[in-house]
Length: 83
Image 1: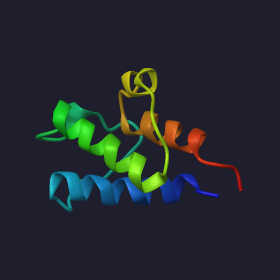
Image 2 (image 1 turned 135 degrees about the vertical axis):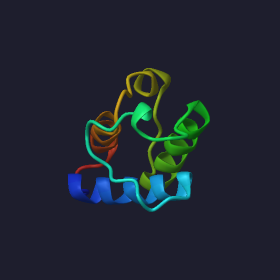
Image 3 (image 1 turned 60 degrees about the horizontal axis):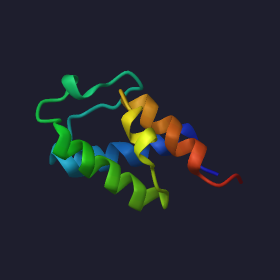
Image 4 (image 1 turned 30 degrees about the vertical axis):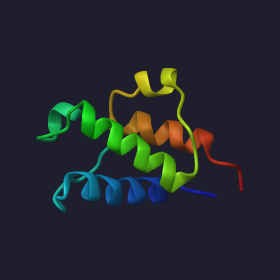
């Protein structure tokens, strides 16, 4: 079972890959406006990478509800199989 810490660890790797930067520190309230270069294209890259890494699919309503990293982590946690 994935823990919140392991989800954030994987998301951190995804963000570092997408932005080609190692200095991004994820926190639940981190928003696109807080990260230089985080535009709609990067958002898509983040979502696609998360879907691939976690083996999940987000629907359009879930994608539209994402306002910060914490929202993404919550959706991922809800979609992962138990235990």
